[in-house]
Each structure stands twice: as C-alpha cells, then as structure tokens.
View 1 (cartoon, rainbow, N blue to C red):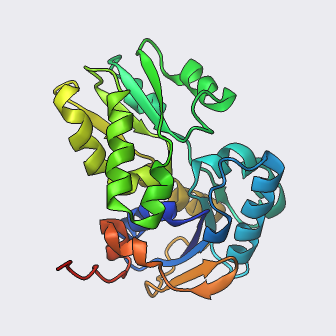
View 2: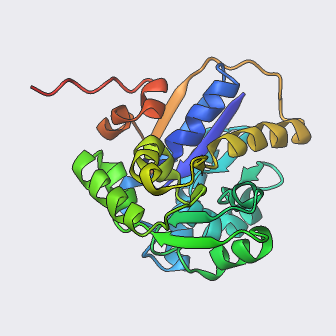
View 3: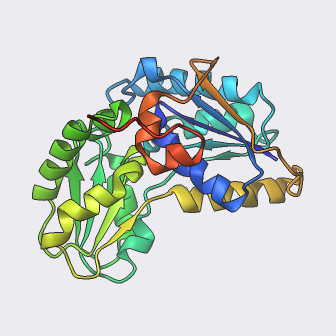
Length: 264
C-alpha cells in the first residue's frame, strides 16, 4: 500500500506518522513545496495552483490515496483536487476537529493561522458543529512558520502569545493547522496553568489517517497489499530528503529523520 500526503511544508509529518503507526509497512510519498510557503496569504487561485502542483507530483508516484495534510489547502483547493484526481485517486482533506472538541459542551479554543481565524469556513464549522460550547478563535501569527524552521525560541514566543489570548478555563484546544500538532505538548504546557483541569488537545492526524485507510478499502485499491515502509520526499516535485527541521519533532524522527545533534 502506498499513500501520498501533501502540504506546503512539514505539517504533513503528523498525519504521515499516524499512518505509519496504523500501518507500519505503508509506503509514503511526502509532497511539499517549502519554497512557496506560507500558503495562507496567497490568493485562493494561487494557493490552488500550488496545491495542484504538489498533488500532481505525488500522483505521478501512483499512490492508493492522497491526503491533503493542510487545513488551508483543504479550505481552498480540495474541490479542485478532487475534480482532477477522483475517482481514480481518493483524496482526503483535513478538517479541524471542532465537533469532538465541543461534544462535552465545555469551553473550546480554536488555534489557527490568521488567514483561517475568523474565515467564513471556520465560522461555518463552528456554527454547524460547536453546539452549546463557547468557542474562542485564537489567531497564532508566526507559529506555523516557526515550526517549519524548527526555531524553538520563535515557537515558544508564538505559543506564549496565543496562550495569553486563550481564555482561562478552556477545556479543549482544536489545533487548526497541521504544523501545530508537531508542538502539541508545548502548547499544552503553555495553556495548562490557566486551563480546565481536563484540558484536551484535538488534532486531525489520527482521524485523517484512519479515513485514508477507509477510503482505500472502499475503493478496493489493494487495502491488504503489503508495502515496504519506503519513504519518498518531494520538494517542488523533485526528489529530496526530509528537511533538517523534521528531526526536531518526534513525528519526523519516527519517519527516519536523524535526531538533532546535542548543543554544546
């Protein structure tokens, strides 16, 4: 079995690691275009063009499914990707986990990029799935870029700023950008002192991975075929290696990125 994932950068590592956890043998194709980051400020048309280029590069490797492991691309480009690639290639988008986060009716914060925060798309999800839970939208400027660079100081600063805007007593945080899942425990540590005692973080990686396997089975695309646990990395359509920043996160190391050398 072979599954491709696409994102602007290393945000796809969380879903890739979740797939490997479910199917250790799965062959993975990671298609990104870090030179075009960030995608959030781009026009929907420009973003869609970049997403299609990443998807086409991945599709050339004949995967059994394509995961759009990017919230922004799922908002703006999912329809175009499905129109071009389905039904031959199942395409799975990424949606913030608002519904499970709000199920208990306790206060929820949605951490997302400034481009997504307050957008009609996110407001629609809140309207449709938040129920009676009080929801606060928290923009996190610079956090995805800091994660992409592996800049610990910048990550800590962006997380601290977002934590300061997260209401005390928040019981659930929805990680509305795939990059944020790579630093989930740092987010928890920053928010926990002022949060509800049962604070829970909700990412999308596990649900997206499970959905990809379901879609492959439904499509009859070799769901039981054994892979070789191969990893192919594409940057702008060219074969590359995992970027050095990937090694800073457990998900990247689980995919073979070498642990960073200890600092003196």
